[in-house]
Length: 450
Image (cartoon, rainbow, N blue to C red; front, side, top):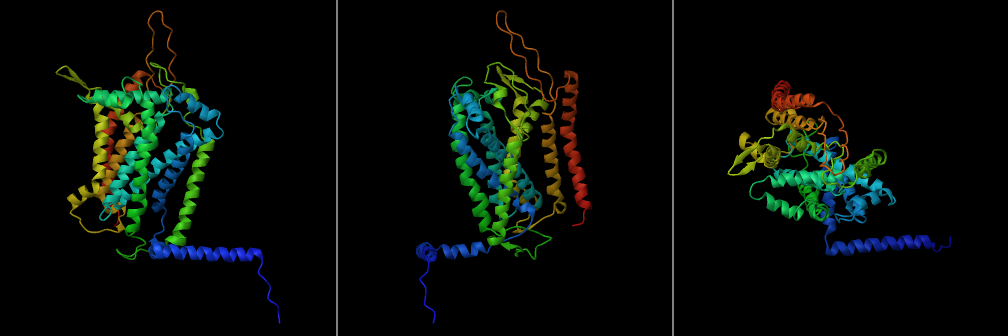
């Protein structure tokens, strides 16, 4: 007969830890019914297709933005007199500071790009229809906040490039009749640059991220989790049936791999691709020429539109109304308004009030796909307005003052006569190409088998 042996210390520790974990779980489940809520959530089915992970790309980029932004906030000084020096010090003296800055930049770029790709997928497949109108509207709000947050972040280094953008923003505010001076005084606290850097910092670090932290979980988790997941018609068994794998472990493992891929890809970009070298742009010099820099693709739409719209001015009662300056922001405002309420506008014109869980192929909805392609073409032509520049005018100083520094050459500079022809061609293209894209896309959709 074998003599029982006393368990070793490691075995006793493991057994005791297991008992403590089970006891704690039962204690919490008796008071907070996690088990009854968690079991069905872990069994929630998710279809398998790469396009459904575009929203996750934006989510993980946003998480990386929060983490890197927290690090940068520890070293950035939002005082207008030392903001630029603190960014240079962060970039060249703080250990890992430049890498964190570039991680933050590329995470923001991937964040906006993933949002655009995700919205295009949702729009062209009709995933915004009933009962997901609120989810779509929150997505449009996130898109607008992401663009505004990007502009604020680019302005914080307070170098010559950033202050030039803020100067343009102030000019746009001042051009608004009646309330323009009040809006400029509120944002800048008087003359330029005033206290705009501290106010941009508070808005960039506290206000907009606070709204995003409230809207992102509501859009990505709560509403999506409470609703049945949309599914492609090619793999669906029916309107009310989802074919796919459960959240755990199938979708959880896939999300984990997506998170690692997203963070790794952004880390590679931050390591090998240099962006925004503020030490080359230099500190802000009033009256100095802005450095040569191509606008970000999502900011170039507004700047390209301002280049293509003629400088129309009308004097009424002693006031100069600058219609050429107002048209680009007005076009973007109308675009976001239509985008925000598009689910209701489509329902109004089609009379479709049914609940939809199956996605359309773009060819099945030419009345939606053709205008969507036309809008994308329109904004692409506007963005093309920033690709070519004319040489800046020669600056001269008053007698007795030092000569101003020469302006930096643009990325693609052409003679003034050639630039005028390019602008004329783009003005024609911004009207002709969207119409051609609409007609061609509609014809293609109607000829495709449904």
